Structures are given as C-alpha cells and as structure tokens.
Length: 221
Image (cartoon, rainbow, N blue to C red; front, side):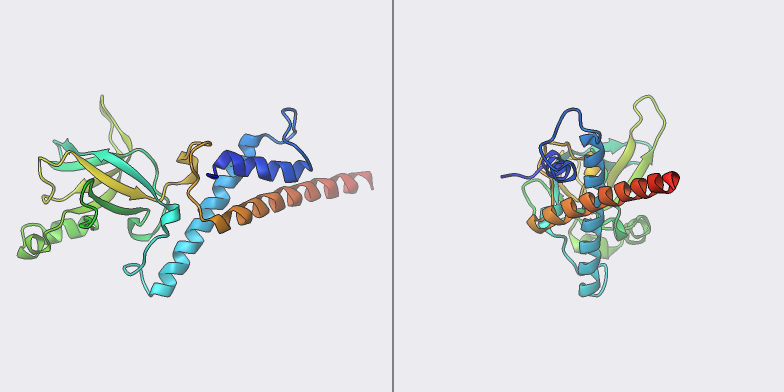
C-alpha cells in the first residue's frame, strides 16, 4: 500500500487521540501533516548527511532513491541571459552543492546525466577544450527573483552551451521538500522512516500536552 502524507497524519492522530480520527477533534489534521512534513525533511537531511560523511565528501555519494521524485521539465530560453533553462515546479530540499537536484538528463538518455556545476565553473570552462572533451551538458541551480509581466519566482535549472536548440525537455530527479508534495500523493520516504516519523510527531504532542498540564497545575497551586 502506497504511503501518503495524509495516511501518516491519520495514523499519528489516532494514537494522539487514543482512537478513531474524528471531525470534531481538537487537533486539526492539517497541523499534524505540517509536523509530518518537518519530521520527514529532517530525517531525509540526516540520512543524506550521514551518507556524505561515510563517503568522505560531497562528490562521492548517492541519494537514496526512496527520497527522489522525477519531473519532466520543458526547456525554455532566457533571452536576457542568452541561456537555456527549465523551471522547477517544486522546491528542492536544501543540501550542499544543490544536491537537492539529484540528477538532470535527457528524458530518453539517463545513462549520460548532465554535469552539476556552480555558477563560477560555468564561466571557468566556457570555450575551453575541456568543456568539449567532457561531452556533457552542464547545469547549475538558481533561485529566480525576476519581476516582469511573465515573472517566475522560484527555482530554475540553467544549462551551459552544451544544451542544443533541439532539446525541448529534460528529466530532473529531485528531493522535493515535503510541503510541495500533495497530501494524497506518494510520500517519498523509506519504509523504516514511517514509524520514526509517527513516533516523533506523537512525542511532540505528548510534550506539548505535558507542558500545558504542568502550567495548569502551577496555576491551581
């Protein structure tokens, strides 16, 4: 059975309430889903950072596929910057070296992924023999703060000149922040994380209830 954010929240809410989820419950399931989101993102970051430490750096690790969602993106042209780019419809999770965008490739050629680059590297290799020798499209991720009639404020993937005019779509594999995942869509976590997320959220509400109870007792005294 596919796990979703709503199902996790319902399981946590049943434990918190000690029974079935009721429409008149004092705790809103939307609030529980928000805490589910925060716990999932925290655990995902922790696991990826542990993987980085075991690999000995930021360049030699892979991201667990359970955290990744694939998106087919249109390739557009920024006439001001004279560059090809794609709009990302979600927010990648914050990781070093823009690793929230795990991989970008041609839709039908995932065996030759594009090369992740920083903005400075893009200019460093431009026009050099090494750029052509790599034979790969380079890209970097950048937040867009444009203000125009057709403005797009969000995250974009910009490509170097290796991206051809005939390239109309790309496949991007992204670790998406939980907030941008719909409540009934598949929630990208490992099976082991389900119980951890529910336990942590239930403990959070237990701490909150104990704090309220202690405050009430103090007032009585």
